[in-house]
Length: 340
Image (cartoon, rainbow, N blue to C red; front, side, top):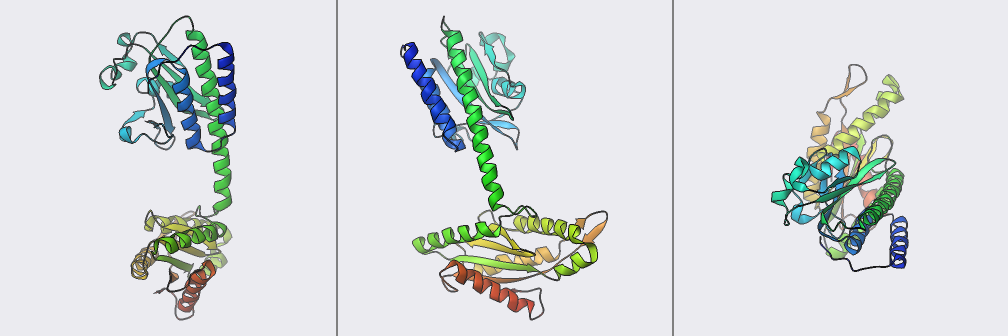
């Protein structure tokens, strides 16, 4: 992004600081925070080009943010490795980097050809908080004059506020995740099931599309606890939850309903499609050998019941009740099957 910054007085800048602090510290949505950073950069920085890179902690690389705060679709396949280039160098060290002459610095060698402007100078600032670096501000060909120290000081304030806001948003998101997550399996919990099922039912009513639900209960799980103890039983539940999740589609939602019961919610899925998916999940789960503790190997089967909107009901309790009833029908007639 590029912008010419009009001349301002001290009062104008004080107002900018106030608005920046208020906007960032009152926001708990990470995408909105990134959008605010980009808006203030656009207002304040006088440079030919600037960019915001965001750290992907899982991949340990950086991606470019778009004006709406999300990944830039134009650069979705372009990633900067931590430690490489201007942004990667700053992200790795957590330090500000000022390069007055690009031609004399190898960290900008690739940028002189790939960027839409000829890079003559650059500044990289880390967005760094108490939990590490979250992103990098890249500024190319900034207008460096007698106000340069003042402008860079503002950038540091922007980066500091941004880091605080990002970490606050992460803490809130983590707390919210804990309230909907089962701590044994890592799947969603039953409280979240009711909320998600209600939401998906509303979507199905609005769009006139089916919705299916699989209620799955492990067979003779009590025997595992009786023979090996509850710690082994909990570890088995954790591995079973991960296995079920791996066997589902990305559009499916997986829940631990309670005890050794699991629920798979399948949006926009007919009874026939749900039955095919349930048979596949059931068969793969039954042939999986779970390695637990020191040399212990356990296999376990399951009984499953399927219910579909609208044929089996139009409310949360009707759908859950129908699937639960079919699952118990399987349990009482030999176990180890899927019933729809």
